[in-house]
Amino acid sequence: MRWIKVFEDFNISQEDLKEFCEIHLAYLLDEQFILDITDKEGNPYHNSNDFIITLKSVKFFKWDIIKDHFIPFLVRLKNEYDDNLNTNIRIKTSIKMNYDWVSTTLKNLINDNCKYDVYSWTDIEIEIYK
Image (cartoon, rainbow, N blue to C red; front, side, top):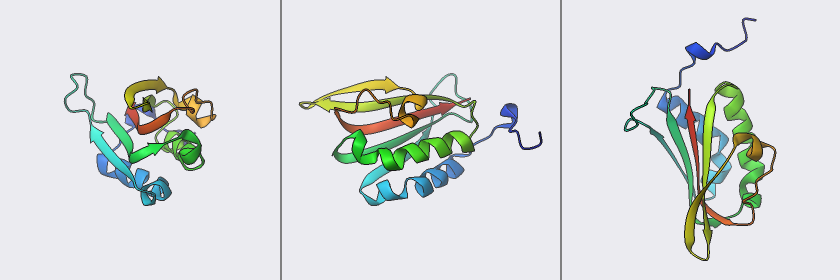
């Protein structure tokens, strides 16, 4: 029982989250992806544990290109920061230079069940909150 994380005591610092992401996304960062971690201070429902992880690329990419590195990152993120952590995931897609944000779930991406895999992507946002 002592190994079970207590959700009420859950605490993430922006620096720790950034370090975690940099370690587990190192390959993608070496491939010219850009990582950004922001807190949601402007949100009226802001909580000190609310962050947005954004992975961007200067060029379009497809799910098949990143999934072998991104899925393990998502699994580690979920395991490290509590199974009960809430997430929203948005993917910025492009079809013939028309951009649109679409949503999916952490579970879908971890299970490699992404229905947007045919589109070109530019950004992935993972909003995490308590």
